[in-house]
Structures are given as structure tokens and as C-alpha cells.
Length: 333
Image (cartoon, rainbow, N blue to C red; front, top):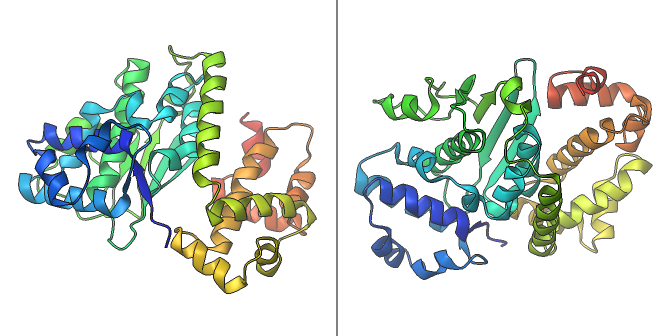
């Protein structure tokens, strides 16, 4: 089974957040069989389930179920590996968050990010996957707290989200959440999400640097290619991108292209936290954004490039993905 991992950069941020909550992590690492010194190795990675155990033990030791919010105090570019610097050099937060989603697996494989515009602003939503252990809610809360704190640090402004959605029951004490997010989150939600205003997300960043952004894209792209090149999810996505202009790819065709049986393909994808239909849908959604940014392509051409034989199916899928029609999405620029 392919085990999900977390970068040493993000693990170091977790350790700093826990230590800010009074937890001594060095003996905890020893207890969990983890190498504390590896936190200083930029290429080291830690198992996802080990990070879940770390969160669980830290909550038990501190008695603070909101300890993940301490990530807001320690989030800096280095916490996000090379992705943090790519985000920092982006033209806007919107452009930076698109990079964050693209390179997320470098930071931690257990998280799936989605970032999309809506009627009221931009939504960054997060799903945390476990391996053998269910993920800790502190992990997701830390990720959202870090994302918002990083936005504030980059802009030098006290950005207030329009909404914060968290899974799980409301805590007895809302104070830490109000201090970090500035508003009361909605609990027992269907997902973990930050909703940020269009004005905040589209305002030029003071740290923007097109040349550096290009350089960081190259570094992050090279790292990601080396890191995920052996993953079946990555290989399947490449095959889907190649086959989609010919029509909707069949599972059998993709499996044959990878020299796998259909059953093995599905099992390997499940081990990596996805499935064939989910991956097909995600790939189409990502490509749709790229194609609509090319004004020379008509909406009909985009539908066919995404493998939709009937354009009406494309329009329905697009509205499900983004909450607007392709035409409305393109008109927003």
C-alpha cells in the first residue's frame, strides 16, 4: 500500500504549533518512533498516520482540543516547503492559492484542496484523508488557520474571512476560534472551508515578483514530478489528459494503457485516496479552468476537449463544479 506522507516543513510547523501549546514534542517523537532530527532535513517526510497520532497525543497531553489553531502563530513561507515561496511571489492571493492547490501534495499528501470562485467570493475547501487512522480534526483546523495567517502575513492586512466552515461538533469554548478567524465558524459543516472576499483575493500582493514566481513554479514542478511520478494517480491523470479529446475514456482503456487490470487499477487508486470516476471528474474540472482561460477556444470546443459528447452534459458538470455556467465563469475573467 502506498502510504501518504507529510513534508518535514509542514511537520516542523505542527511541532512549533504544539510547542506553543506547551507540549514537549521531542519525547513524543521518541514515543511514536519518529526521528526528531529529520525535521531539519528538507527532503524528509513523515507518515500521515504518525502525524495523526502526534495530534491525538498532543491533545491528550495539553487538554486543548483547539491546539491546531496555534498553527496561525507559526505559519511562514517555509512551513509550506517551496510552495510557500511560489505563493509569496504570486501576483495576487487568488493566483497564489491556485499554486497552493496545484502543488499541495508536496506539503502533505493527506490533504485535498479545492479553490474556486463563487457568487460571494473565493472558497478554499479542504478534505483530510487518513491511511489506517481517521484524520484528526486538529490537522484540518491547523491547515485553515495557517492559510488565513499566511494571507494576513503576506498582505500586511488583517484579512477577515466571510465564512469559516468546520466539521465536527461546536467546542465548549469558542474563544480560540474567534481569536484566530475573527468570526464564529459554522460547525458540523459538510467540509472544512474558508470563504474570502473577491477584493482580498484579487488585490495585488506587495511581495509579487513574476520572475521569482516562474522560478518557484519550476522548482515546485520538478519536485512534484519526481515525487508523484511513480504514483498510479499521477500516471492515470496523464493518460486521461491524453485520451479526453477523443471522448470520455473508459476504465478498461486507461488500465490497458498502464498495463494493469481494471481491478488492480481501481485498488491502487483507492490506496492513494481516490477512484477512477473521482479522478476523471477532478481532471476534467482542472482542465476546464485552463481551457476557459484561452479565449480562442469556444465553449463547444472546450466541451469536446473534455470528452463530453453532449455539450449539455459539460454545462451541467461545470455548474456542479463552480456554481456558475462556463460563460459566466469566463466573463468574470
